[in-house]
Image 1 (cartoon, rainbow, N blue to C red):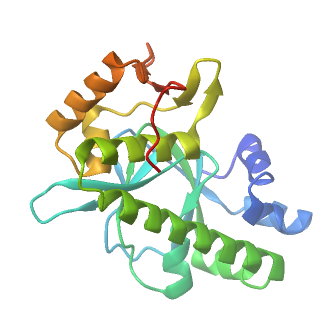
Image 2: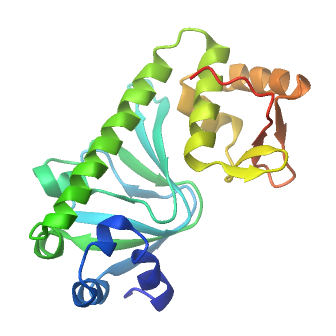
Length: 228
C-alpha cells in the first residue's frame, strides 16, 4: 500500500525528509510502501539483511537483543516520526537487533535504491544523517551507563528518567511517559527481574514519586529523584 496524504504530511516535519526539495519529497512519498504490524509481531529479525529503511507512521516499536538464555534486552524504543534500518543501508551489514511492535504500528518502507537516490546525493541530508548517527551513539552510551549501575533501584530510576526526558509529556502533576509499559517491559529495559521491578515500582508509588495512571501510563512526579 502507498503512503496516505496524512503520512506524507508527517514526513515534512522529520528533519531528514524536510531537507529534500519539495519535488524530491513528493517523488519519494509516491514510492514509499506501507506495512501494518500487530502488537507483538516481529518487523525485523536480528541479522536480517533486508535492504530497507523504515519510517514509523503510527504506533511504537522496540529494538531488542536476545541473550543466549532467552532473556530479552530492550535497547531503545521508537515512536511515531522516528525511523530505523538506515545503518544497514549505509554500511551494507546485517540488522544488529530485532525490531518488535510494542503496539499496532504502521511503517513506511524505503528501499536501498531509493535511499541512495534521494538521500545520499544531498549535502543537507548527509549532514542530518551525521547528526542522526551521533544521536544513536549517545543513546548507546546512555544505555551502557545505565546498565553499568550495580544498584537495582538506581538503574530503574535511571531508565525511568531517560524515558521521561526522551518521550515525557509535561503535565501539571509531573512528566507522563506516554505509552504502556508492563513490568516485564521495564524489566527487559533495565536488565532486572520482573519481580524486582514490581517491588521497586511499588516502593516508588508508595513514596509518592510515581503514579500508575488509569490508562497504564507512568507519571513521574516532581519529587521523583533522578540519578542521571
